[in-house]
Amino acid sequence: MHLTISTFDLIVICGYLACVVLLGVWTGRGNRDLSDYLLAGRDLPWWALLGSIVATETSTATFLSVPGLAYVAGGDMRFLQLAIGYIVGRVLVVWVLLPSYFAGEMFTAYEVLRQRFGVTAQRFTSALFLIARNVGDGLRLFLTALAMEAATGLSLTNSVIVISVVTMLYTLFGGMKSVVWNDCLQLLVYFIGGVVTLCLLASTLDGGWGQLQAFGMGEHKFRVFDFTWNFSDPMTFWAGLIGGTFLSLGTHGTDQMIVQRLLSARSQSEAGRALMLSGVVVLFQFMLFLLIGIGLAAFFAEHPPNEAITRGDAAYAEYIVRHMPTGLAGLVLAAVFAAAMSTLSSSLNSSAATLVSDFSGPSNGSPEVARRRLMFSRGFTIVFGVIQAGLAIVAARLSPSVVMDALAIAAFTAGVMLGVFCLGLFTRRPGQWSAVVGMLTGLTVLSMIKFQTTIAWPWYPLIGSLTTFFAGWGLSWLIPVDEKES
Image (tube, rainbow, N blue to C red; front, side, top):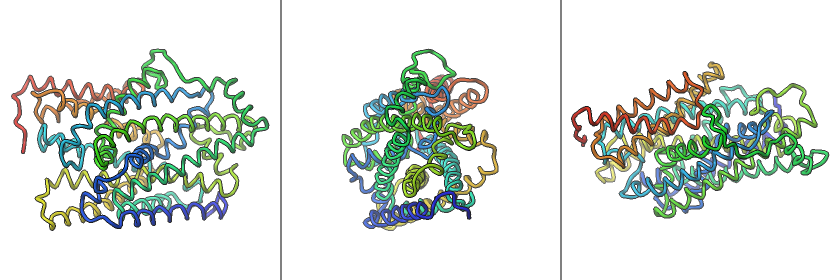
């Protein structure tokens, strides 16, 4: 194994990985039943949920790629427009969707669909979530393993195994309590890592903060708004506002990974507070990452790398490994892995919750059934961890374009699931087969748009939700109203 970082940095990383496992074991020591394991006894404070929501939606791809958007030639801060849409979408989730989730003792978002349409529609949506979530997060694990491989010299397979085992351990032992409290720790770690990076970048420039500001102004990198209408450009105000709103409605209103956190709150009002304020935190987070990108551009303009950096998302990794002082490099690499594990642990826990709650049927309340469901939840946490690790290893044999296309397809579900939830909330005629066909139509249309048009990705959730809704609604007028399945 050839280290590209110092032994001390490696010790920092290993120490951090050990801490998250110990925290998971300690926080999960009071888990007694399925409610404790999957929903932390519905007793988590809003501020912890806020931190967990932000950490969950921040993957390694976000941590390394967002700075790259401002780093590249012609890059700027227009990505912040998407965060504006995120805030609007969260407000709509609190107003429109959240009351449905607190109408009963639910474990998953898709139990709403069981009540409205029936078991088939619920399980089809749950299966769609499980496939998309585990494929997408398996590929995100692969991207994280690439960073560990570059930093530590471990093989890609061993890097996947290390990250997977650590994440599975604290998720398995601690359940939702472990996931949420580790998310808060990981949010703190990567925020500190980001602030340290930005300050270090400014301090290493000959002119300090003034030079960083002058460089950004001279290269027009502080541009935030673009009001042009161009459906092929993801960085316009309209793509950010409209696309970001529908994306947030889908990911934070219908995706079990986020809804599970909301169901863990002490009350509907605390869940709403956590969700809305998380949008503001994400806005500041994006701002920090984009400023890091500008700082990286200024630094490498003054200190050119030995080999040209051809991809924006490689600039931050290059700076961490080659230019950060000993100790700080370990801290920021720990932040990279923290961003990954916060997403992966949430994925494992929400996947287990979905499979056990949506496919095993309601519990009869007996202690024996409760113990069995808890055992199955722990078991499926391991199963999904192994599946994601396997997908990450397989991804190493694929071309980068195939990996990115697979990630895009996995993201289709946000709009499609939003469409079927709206079909259930705002209409009465469509039955469950109309809902299922509507979702299939939405997936088909999005696949055609992805591979046959130049329409930018922020518009996918809008197109997917509208297609699913109107296909399901229109079909209900062509076929007899199907009865809800018990």
